Image 1 (cartoon, rainbow, N blue to C red):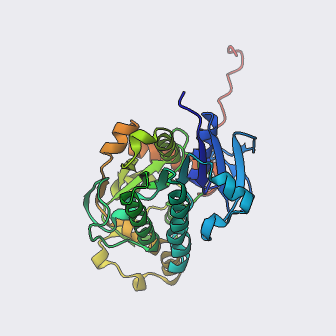
Image 2 (image 1 turned 90 degrees about the vertical axis):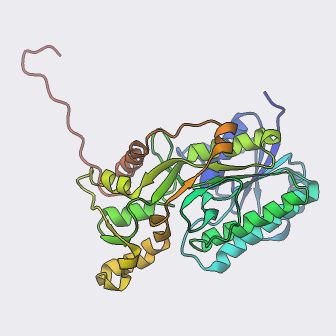
Image 3 (image 1 turned 180 degrees about the vertical axis):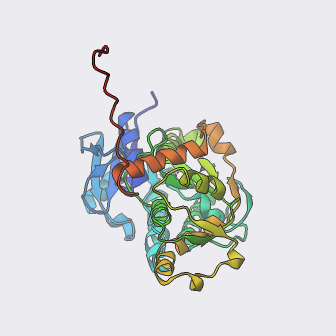
Length: 361
């Protein structure tokens, strides 16, 4: 085993951060878990991680403040970190730009301040969608190519990653991991937080919005949370091999046609109709649909028109992973949503057939 590390993880209570923390501690490393509130760390499968001396130490802080808002003793402890893994971010869509700037931009600036003070190697969690609104292939070595961000979140993450790259050019050891749309576990579809694409699934499958702008050959890239956490953890532990690289944590590519066809397999689901964006008018929607479109779907509709593929050559070479069949993965996500009641009442289980009288048991 590699030498044990002390790792400062920001956003350690978040969807990805909790899984990274669990993997690091399980491998024998010490995690200084930066939490905004002392609410504990819960893994994607519902298990709670307990503080343990030499393994997991929670720190209460705030990345929007200089020095990460840490008290004197915790600042001293943070300076012992061999690595910083920066997972903390606001990922919800439709928020005011000031909120994204405060957490995703200013927060990253403060993390960089801590990293630069000790020249501590940094693994920065970005997003593959810094590519902006574009078609074609987005490469890992690209960053700002004049793209238009699809929303305020993407703009803030592009700004933050640009800052990280500037620090790297000035000598800070850096690795960037860019996940696509982070969703449930690869094998089970289980998800702790019904965020990212999940509100869209709820609005569409309930028929709350029946028509939306999009291209049926547009691509949604869904990556299991365990793939993202595994890649971030590997980049942290094997930093010498990852330094200077950008790694796309890409997942299962599904076109909107795939998406629609799989939804149509479920009798209880309504299936949305996608129309060319040039022919779509939100004002023409019925009042109730227009309200749901503006509150939910409008924040995501740029994803329904991008025909983008994320090249993951570096990530696949560094940490091999085979995504498998996208439609099968989407079914696992939907089955989990049904089993938990997120997408309506679970279908009743068919009772096992009873053996006929006199037949062997």
